[in-house]
Each structure stands twice: as structure tokens, then as C-alpha cells.
Image 1 (cartoon, rainbow, N blue to C red):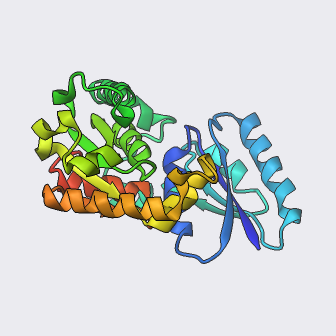
Image 2: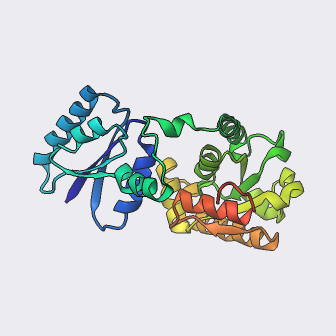
Length: 270
């Protein structure tokens, strides 16, 4: 049975969605998340309630709503929905107001107003850098990289690089380890100068074969035997070169990124 969960926010709702994911992951159930962003007027709030109520008869469970609306009137409208409505701000802001003895601003979009413009531009630069240095396509300005990910093709290097860039403003390059590297027993040419920045990603051979087969079905590239050989060779190479690495098979992007930042001693709020 799938429960429908609505994320109602006067902003993008991304932060609330992340919070909801963390809470809902504690329950061994299937959830369908629907984000309703930019609910900043009475008309939009009423429209959100109507959409939530239309969902109620479709499931044996009533919908669940996480709201981060700071406007009291809009929040009251949403609380009238035929659903379990949980006000994230009320849960945390009111106790903090009492503890800090100061009234919160209760202004819509405040989280976006307070964005540090310098940090924002750092993230944009990091994204551009990571895109330009994806899959070893460029060695230019490699000295600017804060982290260089290596690993066999389809081991998770690109999504991890982009997550680190978008979330933390970290400039990440990534290079594939290929059969020629294993035959030489050496890292790709440019990387020998930047060993302190290297971090490796590996993956279970069976999972790698499944991922590759989706792109190139029936190919040697996707065969289990080839995947097993590449994974073993890559891990042996990283161990020989004393490069820290982890297996990405059962880890989320968030877990991988946190480990990379920790191991590479890049202090980005962790």
C-alpha cells in the first residue's frame, strides 16, 4: 500500500522534502511524494488543499502533509485538508523562540534571502568545473580541483561530482580507470601529480553489470566477467597507490559525498 505525502512550501520545498525523506525512511512502507512549491497566496493554498483532498479517496490511508508555510493564515487553510498535517516550522520555531527569547521573522522565502552570494557563485563555478572535467574529458586547470574521483566506468563518479559541486561548492574532477591503466599498472597520466586529491569509487561487479547492460546490452563491456575483472583490477590499483576508496553499491549519494569530504579533509560544513 502506498501513502501519498505532500510537501507544501512557500519556497522551493526542497529542504522540507529532504526532511520528509529522512523521517519517512524510518518506516518500511512505500510513499509517493508530491511537492507543492511557492504556495504564497490564499488562492494557491486553497488550490493545494483541493488537490490534497482529491487524493484522499484514492488510498486506504489519508494523505500526509509536511508544511513549512510561515504565513499563519495560509497555514490554517492547509491544516483544513483531510489529511495528517505536520507543521515543521511550528514544531521547531516556536520552541526556539522561547529558548532564544526572540521572535522569529516569519517572513516567506527568508531562507533564500539569506543565501550568501559568494557561496552561491562558488557553487555555480564548481558545477561548471565539474561538468568540464567529467569523465576525464579535460586536464586543463586540474590544479584547481579540490577532489579528483577515480573508478571504473559507471561506478557513480559523475553524480557524486555534481552533488558535491551543487551542495557544497566543491570543484570535483573525475577520471575513469580503463583496461589500459590496469595493463600499465599506473594511474591516468595527469593524475600522478595530484595524488593527495584522489579518492576512489568501486562497486559490486553484479550491480555494475546490470547498470552497464542497460546502456549496452549483450556487450563485453557489460558482461559480468569483464565487470568483475575491471573492479578487481581497479581496487588492486588503488590499494597499491594508497588511494582511499569506498564501495558505492549500497550507499546513497549523500553518504558517498560525506565520506569523500571527510577523507579528503575538505571542510565544507561537515
